[in-house]
Image (cartoon, rainbow, N blue to C red; front, side, top):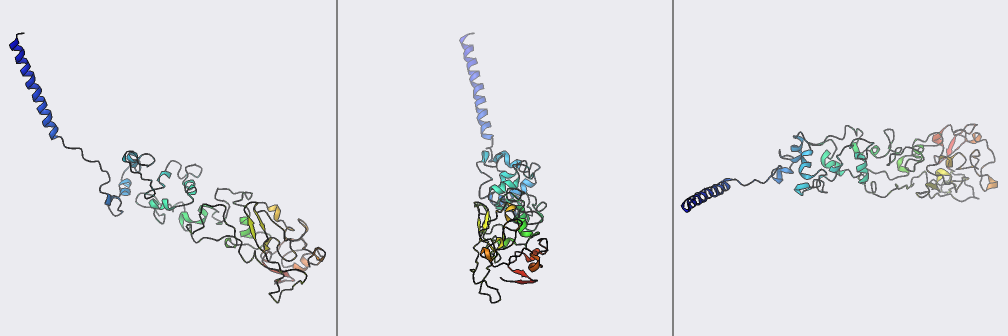
Length: 355
């Protein structure tokens, strides 16, 4: 190929390359810039419940539900590629509870376990399910399951049963009376076969609501105050003119104490701190054998005879209880009227008196 031909080919190639370069440059200027991706719209409408762009409304209208959120905000809603977490303290702190097993009581992911581990704080639930738990645009109502007054904030959600606000079950789901959280709750509340029933307020400060200060604080066990009149009933007290006083005995003023260390009650009228009673008696909360007949007054099981004069007391030396206390006990020492036993009064010949 001669030199002239080479120059011609070179110039043709240069012209073709220039045309391509110019074409690409022109094409590049025609390409529009990529718009900023924004699936939520403006921030004002995003957080406004009255806006059609309110983010729960968007989720509710999607067949994928909150899975759409997870595509950008990560599976645990911590932010993902957006860098904006949904589960911050200001937004949805409990959103990560919505995983498989959330409504299965046998699952470790059961929502009740999550709430328990969060010191029973239900405000996170309300952020989606509504202040009264009746549901919202996105979240279903809680009241289909929590049918009792107050919904999830009903006492029995955390402890007790449909029959009683008190255990069983306790906060850990225990039902056995040998568990400290269960113990003798029902024996005290129902009264049963041996004594008059009590109410929750006689041992606890019953809260007005789930968020009442001191109710769901992180400190366990529960406070047992025993500041009720019955536990503090005084006997042999000359302040009442009608009371038959024994001048050889002091006034017995109980100072009820519950020990969370060994689960015992001591210095309480209910269990022996009264005239002719067993002042040192300390029944164990979760051991019924320590509160049998004869433990509060008398010499133990099978011997309920209160202290006689020879023992420093004033009770007659008679083991036939029904002769004097027939309104409470029969000839076989069976309690026939529990409402008149451990009630702060002495049933004597059919009359209820202070003593």
